Image (cartoon, rainbow, N blue to C red):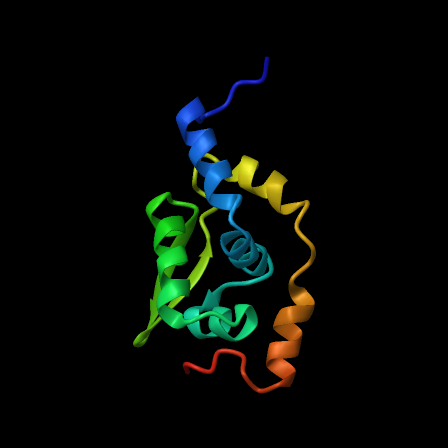
Length: 114
């Protein structure tokens, strides 16, 4: 049997968090590159407070990390999270989000918070 760094509760929590379409979409986008909240708002078409709530849940579970650049906060996948191999495996099944980010750039909306 394969050893894992996560216990059953942690595996369950990770899968539950990624079972939400919005959070899975966020993670799919972060699998391409780091993003700011304003980019998620444009792509997902959801309010900033709602996106921030989803990001808080992902951050609290250590699936994402924040990096402050000036007054803006950028999010990325936390590759140091002990459950990262599980997250990476799940993200292999998520449709590629690169086109969404490219479309955002073409529309001049990419990183509109800068």
